[in-house]
Length: 399
Ligand code: AMP
Image (cartoon, protein in one colour):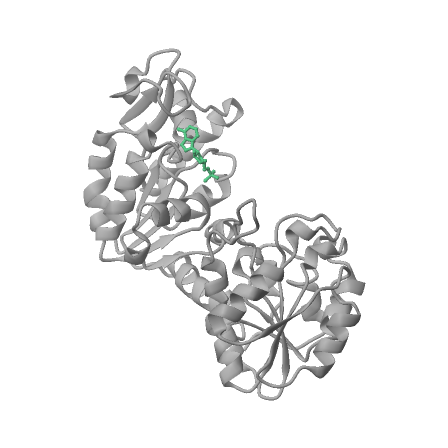
């Protein structure tokens, strides 16, 4: 059954109901506890506003960080409740219970009036949460009438608040998950062609499933970033001290062969920026990929490689991108990632950034507005690209 057939909040009668809604408010914070990027909080606003406009009351829940089953104040959701109140322009009652569903939460939920919002404490304060143990799912379910999952960033996890609770309440997805899977699910299930995938980042091992699944769908697969060097070495070339997963070299050759058999144009870097040290201020230069000297480290794709991508990206009808092209955290090695982001910003087709580091790069480099979609879930979008079923969506009722 396709995830595109699942019920959304629009298919449920929410009027006069208490909606318990799972969001992904796992936002980055600085040492003082200030929220440094509220993209994920803003992502939940369409569903919150929809529910308020349609006469529901809302009980919000989320995790933040990894408190590992203990009530640790540094992982409190209090600052998140405050930010939501500012964004919605309405008070958000915060049930600060160390056991999440405690006396405060129960009383607040019982007294919650339509149009009001309350928020539970960090669901990962409870050790049952990540183990998906029944008792906590039931406790959560007892607070509301309908479960809405809008936490795309944790949709690939089967936890009490993402799947367990759906066993006890009518359920549907929120508008953020709907948007994420409509855009990304459609791209992967029925892409407009030419369909180009760009994969980068550190490890081949993280992306094997994605590469295999995409080889059946894309016309072009571009591989850059640290993972490219394992492919280069597997073909017999020197890669110096670049990132290498030796045990994945055979697999890399197999993937190159499979791509050829399936008629997929698999593009690897033809030149690379190399550095003598893995840090800001290191000496660096660009060399032919087949002439990498010993002792140097590959840190970015080179200009010739970017040129190779240009026509392909500009003429694509669908592009998905996951993983930076180089060590973009160091400005001198961010050029390849920046240029790929720039090319995507000029592409007229559907451009999808699959969360995580590439989303951070696109935002940091100022191209966010130019993309069709930037996913709020790195891990979840990768699993979607892999063709995996996301448990937090699979569990929801079908239309
Ligand atoms: P991932 O989480 O797999 O998408 O990997 C993202 C990380 O890959 C970023 O922190 C990048 O700095 C890193 N990365 C990209 N290119 C390289 C490279 N050539 N060598 C080492 N790390 C890299």
